[in-house]
Figure (tube, rainbow, N blue to C red):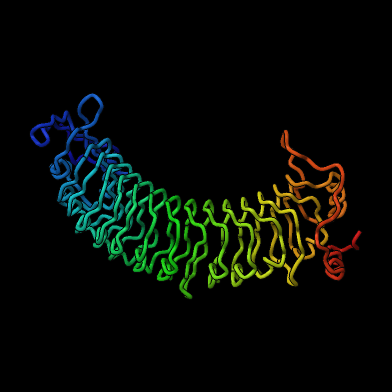
Length: 452
């Protein structure tokens, strides 16, 4: 038998043992890779290479002697139905990273991780864990990251993470979570990132009220139908909120005046209208995605006070008109996507210009005429215009090429893919509301020549 503490590129220790007195294990291989400071435990038995049961003393009785160089412990091809109390109470260890991915874990007892006093990262993804009980994480207060994704958790009960005062990230995506108790996240005073993507959550009243350090909250692809006004009110540090792929219809959210939210994702819901006060106070919001909903009108008051907004996506809705004045109160807006709606009318309204907008996407609508001169009079910095898959006349491309011959301006009028409608032979009567002559002259002077 080789020296269990042999140091080098690869040191091995093989031994035969009957774990628990009933299940024969042919051998346990402890592999130490000095360069990466990792220890791998591969338990091999039976033809398929999996051990049916594992007694908690497997880890404690390994002949390998852990020291300060061993930072990562990975159990490869494990079959650990239950993590008993003290399973990892390994003498002398300074393990910082524990990876138990795909280990058939279904139950974790209280104090299962006692002894891992240096543990910072715990990976439990792709198991069969059904619940997190109070006391599960007793004795591991240094943990910063826990990955519980791809498990079978249905309920998050009170105080399940209570001891984790230094936890920074908690990943619970791809579980079956339906219910979250109001005290489920007690003690997580430093939590910055919480991921609930792909669960079955319908309601979370008072759940997040104590997570004052939270910056990223992902609730994508759940079953949320409505929002209470104060669900996120105490999240004063929140920077990103993802509510995409839910069943929201007319969301109502009240944000704290101190809120610094920068990114709000609401795509793929069932929103048909946006209340005027819905986005009130979000002075720091930079990205807003409302695509793939059923919105047929944008109230001018809805977008008021979004002074920092740079990206707005309202594609795949039911809008019928584009009015420039609706968006003129967004001084920093750079990208506006209104593609795949039912827009037939473009109206120049209001007084102020969208002086920061450089990309406008109006493709796949029902626009039959494009008064580009009037449009760019309110979009003085526009550099990219997309209007393919509309009902535009065929001579428009030649006309626009001549007009913008001396400008660094890109536009796409027609879809050249096979089978698509390129253009309409006969020009239609203009339906675009005209702009005052002084504005047109101002644009013409700005590009250094007179209007054609």
